[in-house]
Amino acid sequence: IICSISVIIVISVFALTCTCLFLDSPPTNSPSPITISEGLEFWKHIITAYGIIAFQFDVHPVILTIQMDMKNKSKVYVAVIGGFVVSISMFAVVSILSVVKHGFGTTPPSLLETLPTSVPLHIAAVLVAVQLCLTSVVSNNALYQDMEDCLNISREFNTKRCILRTILTLLAILLAESVPRFDLVMSLIGGTLTAPLIFILPALFYLKISRLYEDNLNMTKREILNNLDRMKPSTSHCNLAKYYETKFREEFRSYASRRYIVYEWICSKKMEKILCILIVVAAITCTSFSTYLNIDNSALSYTNFTKPCIYNIAVNVLHL
Image (cartoon, rainbow, N blue to C red; front, side, top):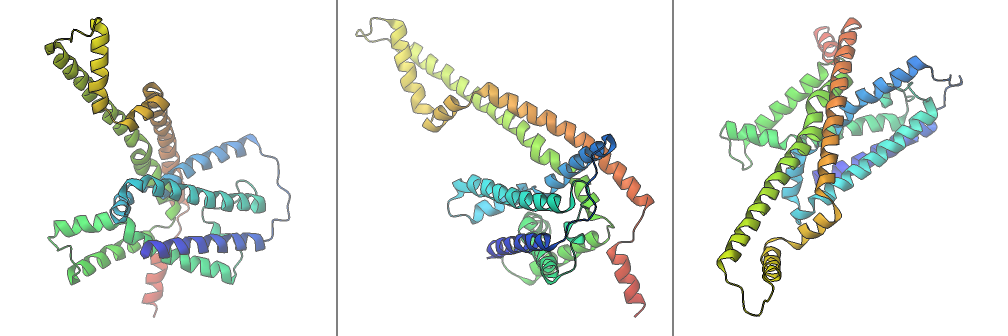
């Protein structure tokens, strides 16, 4: 139910944001030609966005939760790929509309802050807040369960679970409201910590698992050959090599699955290794640049320090 409500809210926010962008009037001044310095700034924004995108698409803690709730658990890749396609399509539409309306390099990190105040904008902001609350229930479920196991709290519905999850949610809100610019936190955590979990470690783990699988297959081949050596060829086989080839194919086909044979025919193992290595190298390069730029931007943000939301709330409460 929570996932269905979350999907409806996301689609509603997308529609409201597109409506606000259509109603927004474009700037009167004509866009100036892009200079070299502006081109460098553009690539800086791209690298910074790399961390934010990694922070946004960190679905690894959620995949297992979604898979356990699915009827056909083997189709989890369909849900993941479908979610990525729909999300990227929505991001692409909003980005294109924003560029058409405002141009390159003029849109701040939060698009909702640049749109004119209107009823659809307020509704979209409220729905975004509700969506974050619903998303935290699913995305933080693994953290909640781990904390419950550490505190010896039963998995059944009880008061202790409600209190613990409420406290953890309030702490998350407190931390979020204590940061003046949350986009820097997303880019820093996403570019430095989350990106290796998404791009680097999965490729390395896949290479390791593939190597173990190949070693297992080679061991099976050797066992089959040893078993064939103990067997005497039939008199009907005039050619000993032909006999061994036939027996080897029969034994090995019974072990190897049909899916793996088709997969090995479509994709070469060398090509897989090359792609994984390219992904790791590109991810390490982007992560290094993103970490440097995010630390630099964080240092500059403290020189132009703005008070966080929780400070304003505390001041208003004290003046009551």
